[in-house]
Length: 314
Ligand code: NAD
Ligand code: UDP
Image (tube, rainbow, N blue to C red; front, side):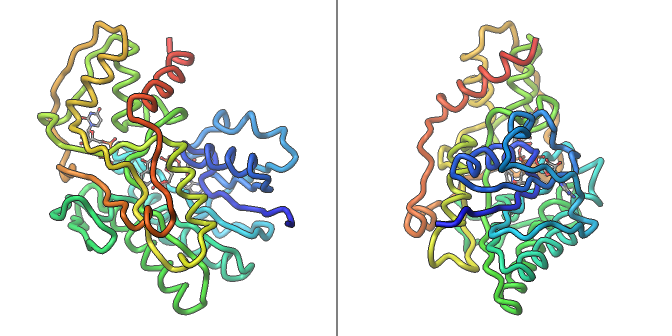
């Protein structure tokens, strides 16, 4: 079979860098496109010597040109709620104008595309767990709207391009994913708690810690994205990708404290506005149609993540 090529937008970020690695090991030629906003060169430095890997430092909002590829993985977007205050316009335009540019690319070069959407399209869900058919409860004018609503519109664009131009685009609604290479100051809960525990600081629980999330280890998630790209009969479809192990944020804090030799305790801080109270994916569709489900147990994933940060943080 001829060598396949993929453009990975957001390839220097947390998920994107793991995806680039996986595609290279699957024998792909990989073009990593990133504006190095929340992404880091250090995430992909070990790939730069690989002849099959190329970094193009570009911003997808400005409609840059790329060499044709067979596939496009669109993961470009800041994803931490901590960034929604500082970068709301960039985030909103990356997921809309930027998505449009990548859809044009996919249409013009007849490339298959996977769009990274998010569980945030369900907002603060009234249906639990969340199936793909749930249309969500998003506050379009709230502090998370720049992200939630632009991902929703990004999905709308993918459907429009599929209907109008027959672009082969599939969408992954990704639920909370964690692992090595999340920035320690990213603001998301797992790297924050680990940085605090390793530094002997108290873990900052927002609210009373009864809100829930379901955490998936990065390798499982990347496997889901690749499986989605390669599965027959999924053109135009949307799939939840995540792990069904719903836990409270308090339980997460206690687990991390338990796994680290630390003097840290817990400090309670106010819950941010519109912070969803419950989140758990219904992944029956992915199980049935993709034959995919996560395999890495929660404590094993956390242990791998902890050892990554232990090596890097004083
Ligand atoms: P990340 O911030 O580590 O990665 C995003 C990457 O996109 C960064 O490298 C950033 O520099 C790049 N980027 C952002 N805007 C860009 C632009 N305009 N042009 C070019 N590059 C740009 O975040 P992540 O956790 O790896 O998330 C990757 C994708 O997965 C995002 O689309 C996010 O919405 C989605 N997602 C992630 C999670 C999760 O739990 N990690 C959950 C749901 C959805
Ligand atoms: N959270 C917390 N302390 C932190 C960071 C986050 O208690 O230092 C909480 C946050 O309020 C939310 C949950 O952890 O309820 C997950 O937050 P994250 O930003 O990781 O992801 P998202 O809210 O997008 O699911």
